[in-house]
Structures are given as structure tokens and as C-alpha cells.
Image 1: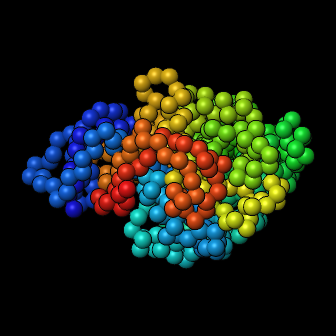
Image 2 (image 1 turned 45 degrees about the horizontal axis):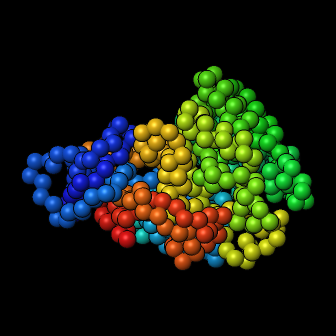
Image 3 (image 1 turned 120 degrees about the vertical axis):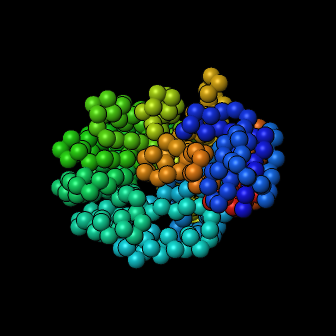
Length: 426
């Protein structure tokens, strides 16, 4: 199908474009920007007046819950949620059941996603067998099966020697190790940010030093091995200061933050609202402000949805017993736009879109997040000003839990195009 997207505000941060231009799509690729290629005749024209036309979003952390946790969510429901959120490329952590530590499991997941013909799904392989932190997986075989990197998800490696060997191996073959910095002992069993609020509520705390001690260890191992590391869901001001220093030193490190941490603090726990329970926990206001500053100065490379659908049986419990996580695929765009609206300057929208498109794709090593001629035609059309209310009925994800329930947000996806085909139209 040949598509002509007409009169939209084209925002493509990868190419520095933010102006009204037409977009032309043919054979699943971007065929022209601004000017139609010779002999182009559209099969379908989409009027994009008043809409932003941007690359499809790239999400660096989306749990699709298959295989093993279909009672929480299915591939079908979460792919539909991705389409409604304008997310066309997904990176999946390996903490499924069974764990993604065998090539056959990775191939099965990619095959299931390919049949649905919606978002591009890119799994992370388990760094250690069963995520137990003892024996390394066959990284080369997992890469051949389709893994784009290796992670431990929420399971820390207790033996630092194992992590050292993993990073040496990854460096040898050019793989990226994805780690969420958390000390395995300090803050173990904690459910909220260590601070006055957790003390008043009687909740066990996770101190910031759990993150910073782990960062110090990771950076020492990076200096010793030269391995490339991506740090997932940084939550603290102190952690960001360490990352800034590491980047200045020249270490090959990148980092992302969860979109919920972009707006909320531990105060949003309120009266034990289990929807506000996350891993890592929501931190103090100074940490949230540091995340905003880190996005502006480049310390934070990308924003992810940290999409973790949880069913009612595991969420409607006392705060300390509830499972951490929230749905995020359908909120990622609106929450990033909310951050952009809070910034001064005319480039806020382009800067925000960049953090969830080409900059996220660069981290994952994927040819996505751009509207360059010849690139895969993964495109989202959205109304940046249209306000919508976050309600359970508005979410396609099987997970209906989010601390933003009841909020009114601006920015609604109208059309999502994947590989040149209209995959969702509101």
C-alpha cells in the first residue's frame, strides 16, 4: 500500500525536522519527506491537519507477560495497547516463565509477535541461566535467536565475579549488558523510598544507597572490562550524578528512567495506594527534579514506559503485599508530552519525542525511531492538545492499574502505522 500523510506537523528529532510537511510511504518504507518520489500515486491519503506526525515510539521496557503469565496479560492485549499508545517497537525483559535463557523460547516469542503483525518485539536474553546469577547463558546462541542484549531484570547477581565474567564475555562479542542498579542486600524487602514518609506510614524502606552502591560496582567492572552497559530505570539524584561523572570519564554507559518517575514522588503513595508501588520505588521530590534536569542535559538518554501489567488479585492488596508495577504503554506518549509542556523553550516537543524514538533506538541498537527515507514506515499520528481521561475502560492493556487513574492528560494517538500498514485508527 502507498500512503500519503498530508498537512501534518512532521516532528522527526533524528533529522532535526519540526515543520509542516507531507510524508509518503511505499512498500513498508518511508518513500519521501516533503516531496513525493517520482511516479508516486497514493492508494490512500490521510489528512493530518492539526496532528503531529512522528516516528513510532520505541519502548525500552515493556513486559508482555508471555510466556508464563497469561493470567496477567496476553500478547494480543498488550500489542493492542502498544498500538493505542503509538508504540511500534518494544524491548522485553527476560523475566518470563520460563525465563528467556534458551534460543527456542526467544524464537517462539518473536514468532508469536510476528504473527500478530503489530509492534516489532525485541527480547532481552537472560544474562544468567534462570536469572539465578550463577551460570552464564549461551549469549551467542541467544543473539542468533533474536536477543538484542542481556539482562537480569529485577534479579541481582550476588556473586560479583559472575557479573565480571558476563561483562568480559559481552565485551568480547560486542553485546550490551542491561542492568538495573540495586544492591542485593541493602533495601532487600523494602517497598517504599527510605525517608520521612515511609517512616510515618510504617513501610520498609529502600535507600538511595542501594542504587548508588550498585552503580559504583558496575562502573568499576566497566573500567576493568570495557563492556557497554545500559542502566535501566534510574531513580535518584545521587545515581544520576554518578552516571554524569561516568559519561564524562568516557565509560560506554547509557541510562533510562521510567515515565512514572518523571512525574510522581513518594508522596503520591498517599494513603497506601498500591497503584503507586514500583520497583525501584517512587523517590523524593529532589530526585524527580534531578530526573527532569538529567533529561535536559543529556545525562538521561531515554524514557521508557516500564509497562508491567498486574492483575487485580496481586494489586488490590495492602501496599506492602501488592505486586509492584503499572500499565504504561498507553500513557507513555501523553506523560512525555506532559513533561515537554512543563519545559520552557520551543523545542520541548521535539526533545521529548526524541527521548522515546531515535535516542531509545540508539541504545537498543535498532534501526527505528526515524522518518528518514528508506527507514521502516513506523509512524504515529497524534493530537497533542486533545485531552482524555485515564480510565480502566480506556485502556486496552489487560493490566488496568496505574497511579494516573482519574487524571486528565493531553495527547491522544489517532493513527498508528507499522511497516506501512495502518495498524490502529481511532
